[in-house]
Length: 406
Image (cartoon, rainbow, N blue to C red; front, side, top):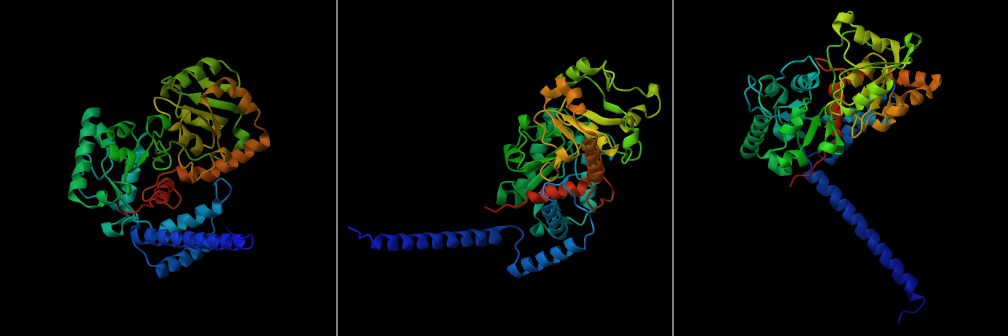
């Protein structure tokens, strides 16, 4: 039987023991994480790199506003990525068929082509796989589609290619593919990976059709911005006085939400809603010029949740109105979309005009000014430019690269 005086003393000793055990456990996990993460670094090198990155951040004169969820974190992590991040590209596969090089840098799937080209010409590429944080699987579904490959054959080609890499090299088996990534903008590319469950479940998929209801995993996969380049006209911005139309949309009725949008609002006098695409016969660049005249540009999902119209709206300075369910927006974990866009559920289509009219002039000006700030993040360049679409995709990859080898 414990006396009342001994009970507090023994409880105190127990607490100290548990605290000591917790600290030792934390130190052990930290040590193992540093030891088995790839590539390995010493503590001295880590501290030296951190000081160098801090100096780089302090010297960077960029203005980081609240369009980011955490401006300071983004600025520091971006500098760290620029300083450290390395990607190894598998050299297997004939560039004249489906591998290594882009099909083209134009059209609505240009994002895939630009990434294939940018990664090869960037300082992120390493020829030493032992220095790589991530491994790029350079097979292009856009090139397969261009050669008329069927969906079923695409799946077989992707499966055979990845399985050949797994059997030839040791890198996949160290993490079961968790430090590998695959890039596709064409929606068939998502389907082409389905023959390899580990590629879907473990590897990072950067896709232009990031819908939650088709197996997209937000904390692992990346929403690739679909950008129709080259843009036909210069970027819009700082032109609020010219934007007299409340809202604009023109396009094919190839989804339920688009059918409803056209049916409900095509005869409205304040919303410019066209039931079909604007024909070239209507005049030169009429479609693009209507972005310049509009305050808000409606971006409903089509055959997929994504649309190049979102990047068009951003480029031309028209506030995008996202009207799509299950859509993980590009760079959503970096950018605060509600600071430069209007994000709605599909069921809001019936109150669309009322919702837009409730946005005050001051709120619209703030949205427009922020939109101009994010334009550079939705522009592809060759060679790539700091903070452009390529660097934002690389930053998303950097955020997901932390893995422990088995």
